[in-house]
Length: 381
Image (cartoon, rainbow, N blue to C red; front, side, top):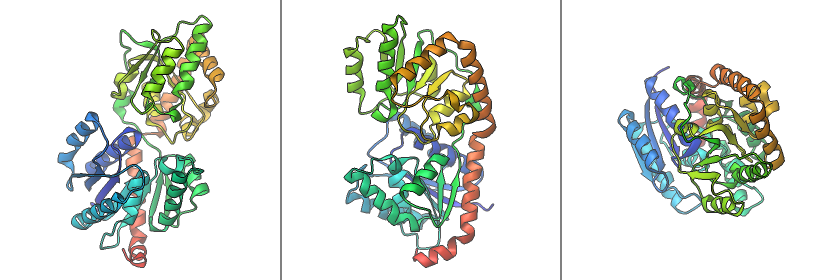
C-alpha cells in the first residue's frame, strides 16, 4: 500500500474517541503514512495536551486546534473552511472524521480533488435522544451528509445497526472494526495499598450509571457488607454524585478521585464496576479485561460483542438489585470471578488488538480509494 496523506478531524480530545484516534494515528505513522490532526481548542485537559505534544513531532501535517462548539453553531462554518484548507495544503488522500462534529466537517469540507471521506461516529449523535430538538437536528444532519461519505467505520456491530435504523444504509463502504488494546495492557496491575473494594472509571455523566452503583453500595452496606468504592473520573455530574454520597451517609465509604491513566485507576479497586446505561464499544471494558481484573458491567451497546460467549455474566442497566446481587456473587465466589476474568482476557488477546484495528481501517481506506475518483467527481469535490 502506497503512503497516504491522511487528515483526522475530531472535536473533544477526551475519552475513548480520543484514545481511538491516538492509537490509529500512531499505527498509521508506524506503517509509513503521512498524518495530520484537526482538533477542538475549547475542550481537553492537561493529559490531552501532553498526549498531543508527544504525538506532534511524528505528524507530517501537524496539529491545528480551532474552536468546535459542542452544539450546532454559526462557528461551524469557519471550522469547515479550516478543514478544507488543511485538505488542500496536505494534498490529502483521506479525511477521517470522528464523532458527530468531526464527521460533519470531514464530509462538508472541499478538497479540490477526489478524496476518500471516512467517518466513525463513536456513538456520538447516534446515542442522543432523538425526541429532543437537538437530537432531531443532528439526526437530520446525519441523513443529509450520508451521501458525502465514502467509508463508514463502526467500532461495534451495535453502532452499525443503530446507524442503519436511525440514519439509513450508506451508499459507501460500511465496516465494523472493533477497538483494540496494545500488548503492554495485558501486564498485571498490582493493587495500591489503599485500594477500595470497588472502582469505577469513566465520565461523571448520567449515561454511565454511577448513581445506580452508589445506590447498590448503600443497599449492600445496609445488609452488613462494609463495602468501599473509588469513583475515578470527571464530568458535569460530580456535584450531584457527591450530594448522593452524602445523602446516603456514604462519605466514609465512597471517594471521588480525579481522572487519571487507566492502569493507575485499576490499582485503586479490587473489582471494577461499569454500570453504563448506554455505550458503543468502551475501551475501559477492554483495558479492564486485558489486565484480568474482575469486572461487573451491563448488557448495553457493544459490550456483548466484547464478552461473546461470556455475555450471560452481563447485567441489565439501571437495576440496583441486579448490580447488588452481582457484587455479592463477586465477593462470595471469587474463584468464579477469577475464571471468568481469565477467559475474558484470552478473548481480548485473540480478537481485540490495536494492530488488527489499524490494519482494518487502512484496508477500508484502500478499498474506498479504488472507487473514490468517480465518486469525488460526481459530487464535485
